Image (cartoon, rainbow, N blue to C red; front, side, top):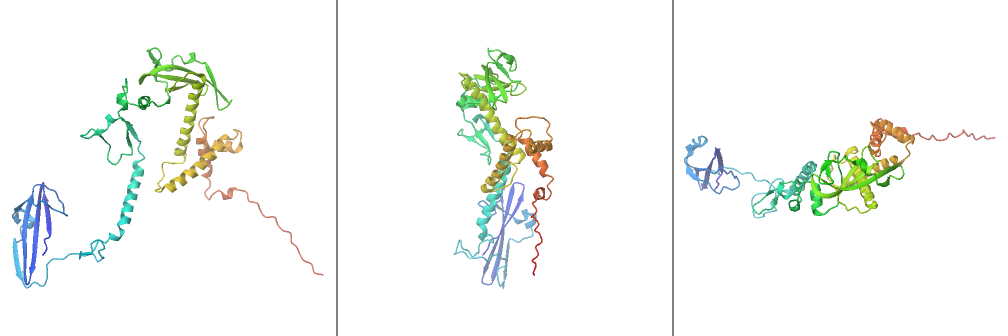
Length: 386
């Protein structure tokens, strides 16, 4: 006995034909019945609702079929089935074999995981988004619902932003102030500040304050520091504006919420930003010059090895930058880089570009660039026989 299924879909209607085969002794009978369901949910593996029975001629492809056929002297069933000739080690009582890929289930699963990891490498290049709870969708219980499959990219900062008083816009500065973290930010010249509740451009009156002195990078650069308590338009909380003169062409303006009570506190804020700037430029150079974010490896060991060799290259650039400005090798490398500016404090970029330009001429490696020491020629020694 066998009942094969056939489906036909017309709009929102799903037609199902059951073909019942029965073979007993010499009598072979076939019964065809058709059903229709208004819920067009095609599930080949398991059909729970066939719907109502309808005539076969309601479907043009089944109109030529007879509802009932019976004949005699059949030597076997008129249907066939495919059986995979592989031993069934899952259900030993089943007469059917397992699928042709049953022995490779673990390998297929590993391939699927690796494929998903490769896709994640592309998706993880997207910029991470940090926002307050009000910017995310919520379910009926009020819980935050992250975008499906991107939970590692989106980060909710919580309700602390909303509870912070006098916050008119959501920014990282508001979040830092609300959670009580220390910040040190660089202010652009277009920022408006207020000392006496009257907001004006930040560059207004900068020349009035030159009270403290400090040294930057030893005795090579002398910087003058000053500070004043102000407010900015983005947040009406009191912060300190630290002014640094002498390092750059225009005064450097730093905003911090760190309490300043002495000259040493002002110097610490300035040095803190300088150290932060150096670290950021180090990683930025590492990513831009060596394409550290544009690699395709799947194992952590390979990533660590790649990071190690790039770090060695960065250490070499650091040694070159610490050498004298009149060093012949350094001068040649910077000349090959063809920089736009003559002098900069952070010269990792031009050193890396210059070395890359020099190595571009090495079509067959750099082995032939080194001078080889030829072995000393031995004098001919003749043994005379008297």
